[in-house]
Length: 169
Length: 189
Image (tube, rainbow over all chains, first blue to last red; front, side, top):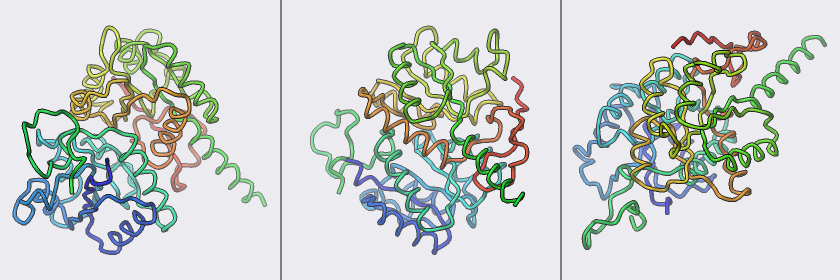
């Protein structure tokens, strides 16, 4: 069921994006990972603005991995924006950053981050962290309804509760 | 040689710290409390759990009120495991209260409930729950989930500073990577 849920990765460093993708593959995470390269783009994606207006192609994510230090708009600003949107306030956001500063940790939680993770430096650790994210966030923990991907076809009345997304393509 | 031993000692402390997250369990079902404690015992996480039996008591604990005023004995937790259906004050109300307190808003709260209702899931996240977990009913699944909680929340995820319990021995290990820093327990509510 969670295999098709989209993970949104906000990360400006291409090397890290490659590393994360590779680690996810290694950890057998089948979920599609969509990448946005800065804070502004993250917000455009979540708003469904511009090229992200097609929700079939760019569904709302089930989980967001958010770097802090990004150009244009920082991850903490993105987080603050997300928590102010009624429709996104339940979106699960994991900060994934190289910052080890306790000030950032405190601030991120205060702004409503679901968790705070420091980027591991070597690939092995990245893979085990990916496994853990997969097991905890995509399997054990329940996802809120709002962030489930939209159903591909709206056939019949949409009165069913809490089972969106199973048939997402 | 001495430096070597110091390194081992520091590592030892680090491991002990990892094994001692302070968990506050808010749960009114005595059987389930026993089950959780048993699971944590078997997973070799000694005595990390403080139990409160309803929402009112949870708030009293976090405020440090009444019998909870001694923070040595009842330290602020690293993590709260919060049931939703509890007498007096419900879990969602406790959650709302926690996230409104300036000194507690970054406290990590994991909802652990038998409710599978999507309404509860949505509302819990909106109120600021860090995660939402449905209670496993059998021992094996609960063991697996408990390990996962410790692996993710105690080892992998960073804790906000304010919720580390005040202890003295950590002062000399503040700089090593991945190790809890010196606790600055300057919380006043």
